[in-house]
Length: 247
Image (cartoon, rainbow, N blue to C red):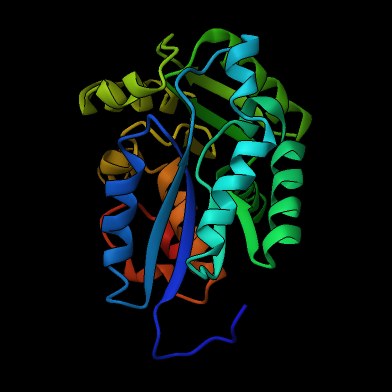
């Protein structure tokens, strides 16, 4: 990859589920706040359902994801992120393997949404977590078990029993607000909104002010983490939650 040039925006590549309609516009709005320091670019691969079925799990085989990463590499991006949360139920090792293979193929640094969560939770010392998702119980239980294995106790959780993936975007903000308020009653160290096709980011700042608990949205944590990776200070992003001050 070419050496950095301060006069050229840093380019961030995002691997995106095909049926996702939320993360691209929200991520683009966040990156617009960098005033040209960084731009964001997207490549899609097929994801249309989230469940524990064989067909759903096959969507996350590495081949199609790596092909999409190859297309982003042709734009000479400075990092590549898998902007999705499948490792929350499949395990962090899945994303570590994916990122290693992207880096081996392209020579470009790689990360993911769940690795960004992991990094932030480690730095914040999170051990008691609130969890909000649109997912099925069979997915949520896997996520809770994986967090337990990492030493994080999910002390409150809500889910919507939606197998999506497109439909995740159709849940309204008031539904998401209510879910966050419910899990806040357990007074966790932080609340994670886990899904990149779910509108947690637009309500994060207002509910942090109301609840006095960090609300870590999947889209926001990926944006902040990748900005940091390419040398852009995320604190320039306002109105999307306090994590941009601490990432």
